[in-house]
Amino acid sequence: MKHMNRRLVMAAVLALASTAACTERGASPGLWRLYESGLAGAKYIDLTHTLTPTIPVWHGFAPSTFGRTVNPETGAPYTYENDGFESNRFALSTDQLGTHLDAPAHWAPEYPAIDELPPTYALRPLVVISIVAQAARDPGYHLGVADIEAWEREHGRIPAGSVVMVRSDWSKTWPDPSLATQAVFPGVSLDALKFLHEQRHILFHGHEPLDTDTTPTLESESWLMHHGYAQAEAVANLDQVAETGCLVTIGFPKVGGGLGGYARYVAICPASWPHGVKIGDVAEAPLAASSRLLHWDDARGMRTRE
Image 1 (cartoon, rainbow, N blue to C red):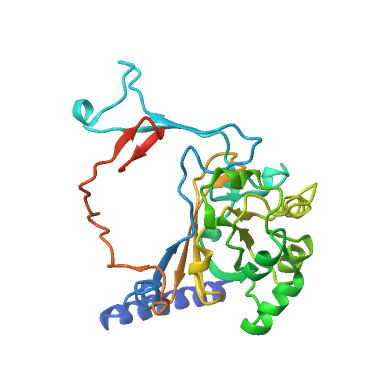
Image 2: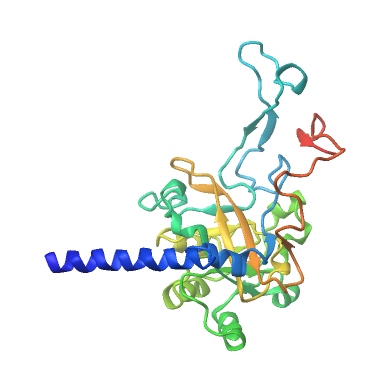
């Protein structure tokens, strides 16, 4: 044990010395080098729909409403003029709203809720598999194992631990409320999901529609949730992302006992990719001011610059 402790101490000293030497030579420490060499010059693409009171949502959930936060002492909304700030109140009918992440506890209470998902979900390799051509011929087409195998013949094996997004272009007409009433839409078959998880060991998959499949029992979603797998739903802008070579960042509020998470997915693609925005292309700190002031719009039931 003493020899083991000495070895651990020596290893720590050598690691510190190596870091110090890199710092003295002007190199950035640790993962800062990775950021500077790759991520700082990358293209960033938002894969997320904006939450509003009128976006498509399953008919079984009541409408959501946005409002102005009221001062409980006066009963009046906070205003820039009187209080120096304003605030919003959100009455969201469900945590399955807009672009979101389904935790397996959505269907299976023995599995983790949103706040119990590990922080390792934050950043992953992104795979995009297109079924656009198939869905154009058959609006109810579901991704199959043959589609995955065809993708791998062209691009190579899907990396373990990756996120696989299924592009169908279903979201092209978002936020048309009629999307929530469609009984026929492109989905992901149970066989495909079993292949992705059991053979390729992905982290999770994502799709553009509000549900995973169109079977009477939602068999694909049921299998996922009851086997401890998460999934992304109502994803946007997959037509702007490369099929390989990008990463995806995954962010969602850590709501105690949450069964779904209002998620923000951002693809990070190589600097040469034609879509997306680079750091430095837009104002960040400070952020840019607008001549069109944000204001409460009674007609739309939300704040807007329009």
